[in-house]
Amino acid sequence: VLMIVMNGLFGLAIFVGAWKHRTQRFNIQSSHMYIGMLILLVGLGMFLPAFMPEKVQDEFYIFLIVAGALIYGLFLWVQTCEHRGFFEYSDAEDHELVNSVHTHAERGGLYHSTLLLITMLPVVLLAKGMAYVLNADIIIHGVPAEFAGLVIALLILAPEGLAALQASRQNNQQRALNICLGSGLATIGLTIPVVLVVGFITQEHITLGLDAEAMVLIAVSLLLLKTNLESGETNILMGAMHMVLFASYVALIFI
Image (cartoon, rainbow, N blue to C red; front, side, top):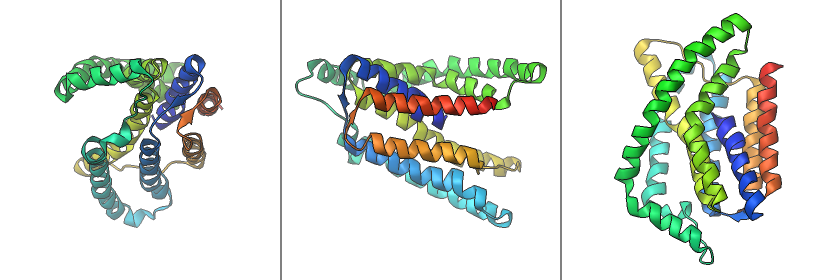
């Protein structure tokens, strides 16, 4: 999911937006928040467990559940209440963007929350059905298991990806950034604590640490994000770089 949202979807959104508008601006405060949180949670939840002695893993996982849930909850409060303006951007000269922001704001959170639940349900059910088909293909045709995971993740992320692409085409790169990096952050901040809690309840062993190859890909992705988003503007080359990194991840599945 991280490789898809940070490189595949976000890279394509940057590329498509730059193709139409050349350069696009966003609030640099939001990128600092997202990247800082991603570095923290990736480091604690996906890198450090690979080097953690097995005898202290349970204690560390308990710490990770509490720390991850608290810091992600604090981030949501900052994003929606304390520093909401950090995650908004509007250009007075771009009337279309300003009107688009106001239109979304008038609908309210309850409307969007309800719509999110209604639209996500069929996607999740479809992904569950496709998982059985892909598992059969893995057994029959010898398809890499990682490829099946990629397909399911792409299916689940399709609504967000389409929304990010539409936002970039409408010259609203801030919304595309919020969608893509917000999805990546939620994947770690929400999923890891929940999976660990379920693991403790069912007494299933959970392995969080990535292998060396995956660590390199994620580390390069974070460095590339930090470098490309440092100026507060995006261009077509930045999008192409992220797309090439995502293509490398897909290629390595089959190598």
